[in-house]
Image 1 (cartoon, protein in one colour):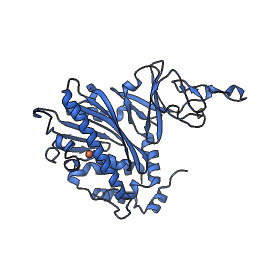
Image 2: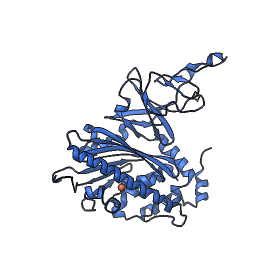
Image 3: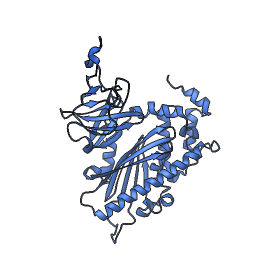
Image 4: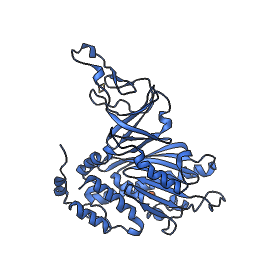
Length: 370
Ligand code: FES
Ligand SMILES: [Fe+2]
């Protein structure tokens, strides 16, 4: 049954759309129910995650015919396959029999067999065989296929969009490419190293909001990110458009006696709703945060190293990023307790330092059209 906006407003005492936007303009955060209401979580799945491009994996996960990679785009489990004809395809990773997952982990197989009752699909998503189906009077395998999703490659990265009729991926990557070219920074030559994953006990927006501001960097990350980069407002710049938030800041400290003068420094982009990209002169990453429930989310971050970069610094930097992201997880999990308290309805932003949050929250509210 479609969710009724009016019912959500009444149940949680939310003001009309225009009043929420006006409060954001005045530096208030979104009201607390945005961070725990199951109805808003469901609406976000329908209105945002079901129709957005989201980062899935590095191309190495589906490099050869027969390779398949499992991921999620919001609530939608997705499988990306590399067919024998060389085509990359994406499907909802849900069997058409009784909706078990076709694959629970990535791998390489000529056919995809659902582990529950053995229905077997081609890498093109078409049902090939179903045990005992020949005993049925009316059962035609050729009429059944996995549900398609959109999949596209951007340089060495694979993106998915649950909407099979999605706009081309370039509609959102063009902005990043233009900006990263202007910044003379690009991840496309960097080499994949490792995937980090984090399970959070918080609404996905708290984690995303943490990612789009660096006001917290000198305190929360004083021995990690805040030690590595200059994060004062005079050194560190942030900039937002409706769908993309940019950061850049200089490197402050390097292991050994390396002088950071002349280095490009840190560059970061967050694209609504959930994908993010970053690099400096040594490492880079690309990842995604995904809602799992109203108060749970999951983030994965694929780490890259610049070809030829000093391996001692690369190792130190990969470790610094893991510590930074664990610190973020701890903070956002604790924020969720605050949002659940029922006693503090909204937060108050410092707009000089936290304006990207306004942009992120405004885009969220507009996408929900409430
Ligand atoms: S659910 Fe897949 S074969 Fe039964
Ligand atoms: Fe952080």
